[in-house]
Image (cartoon, rainbow, N blue to C red):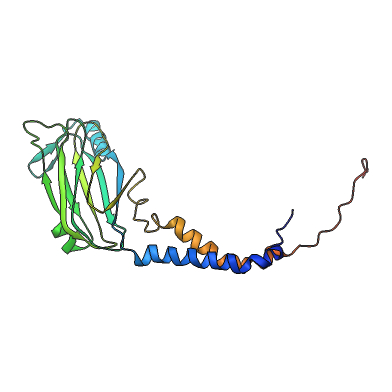
Length: 232
């Protein structure tokens, strides 16, 4: 196995150092100094959370239903949307819509670890589930969302296990939507938008330390050429 001899790059060392310094300065400026409005949505896969209870009711030959508020569900599905400000500046007047395509009776509930944030999140129904229970839509809004703050919107609905949709369009705010996984797997990974930049910075910082090791050639013992078969 061959090794790279970096001693040949001696005359270019000042130029390489200047380029690396400029790249690191640019990355630091972008991720720390530049004001970035970045909103991330995680849409957790919908699932039938009442299936085990419904099975038990069938075994006991009992009627099964769940009541949430003034609405009754014969089967209950759940879809969760998590939203987080992963930028470095507060997002003012945050608003977006969540839709469950299809014919459903639905209820949307907001939750957050921060009680003040939970109280500020408004959930407004934009459909009449009695007259036209098709494509139930909810408008979610809050006056502002600070960096690293997050909250969840849980949608409970009946009928087919459909996947929800998120619609968000805000001025000067970068939006990213991710799907799949479980709720535990989607505990907000703050490194998602900066993972590539972070790895590149680490590479640039540690490359000068590992370069001398790569330039050394390890002595290897000469291989003996085997001729024929040697009996035991």
